[in-house]
Length: 190
Length: 278
Image (cartoon, rainbow over all chains, first blue to last red; front, side, top):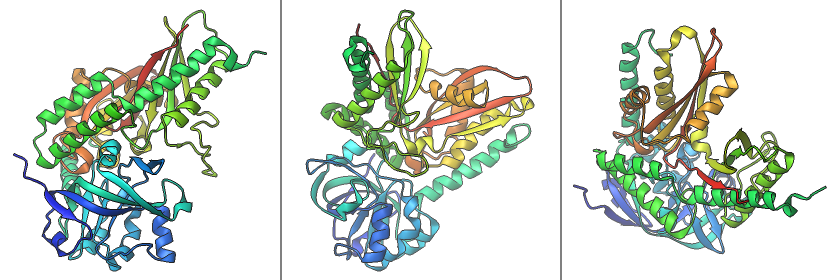
């Protein structure tokens, strides 16, 4: 049986500390997209919105006529080195795919969470979105910071504020399974 | 000299390319859908079941609204079959390019094609050698579009195994997914090219993705089961299904060689074929 998803709304506060890796949540309220270029700009020039309790979505959407057409997540690990300053300024959560590094897991401890949204599900994402504005528009469609209002976007907690990381659990399982597999075949691993 | 747009056959090829492209990015082939639905029903991890629900809902929404199922609409990989009475000319390549440009504007597709060194985006998904066009003789005049996204393509690998390492083929495929983890948006389809030469093994691996994925040989099933024992699961979140199918295409090779290529494809195993109307 599927447990009912937890409803949460931005700006986020200490309620995120109660979330556990593997929990399903539905997120509503304003989020901000940001990829590599926007992170670099925010690091140099400052964050163009109130970071307190804010959520950043790792995404480069397709936008047409002021509407979000397709907005699936991009690979979060590219932004591993650029997460720390955002959390220090009050950002409470990231949304993306594939998880983030061990440094970010430590930076999230006691502060915030990493949400996973299903990779490739660009049409599903846009059906839960309304475009509210844009910052850094000169960076181009994929790299600009789009201000998006979410209506119950279905997410899963990938990394919680207590050091639990379901990507890491799956990774460790895969490594153990491969060691066992390599031990069975003649000559071992290729 | 005839201009491509004025020859009815060439404009039909442009149109068929456009139609196949639009269909490929908005609708999954029936065999691909069947395999995803079957895995969704069999998955036991609650988190992974949630991911499958999202994938199926996303496929439905993309079909319903005619919008791309993923914002990475890929780079154009094209397979043409030419009947005996259609000569292979540069005009055919130009006509296919025209279809790619039109699809980029009208579907719309994300412009993904850049110069490999300057990284300058051409804006229309065409460039030198892009679309990648593969031509084969056939009975009917058809164009198949396989839009290839970068997330999965970047996890693909090739190895020149030793002829004595036939047993190592399975290990190489499994290791490819061990390294890939959640990056290629699993559950994946794995095209495996075995034999041929360094370059043709990779081409076979990509062509294997076009084979029907709802049946596997014993060898393919064995590799698929080993990949799934990794437990990487949908999006790397853990689960029973890391791979949905493994498909193998083989060719003869040098007695001293054993090329093996793995082309990784995300759950959105997009491809569509259109007949060129004559």
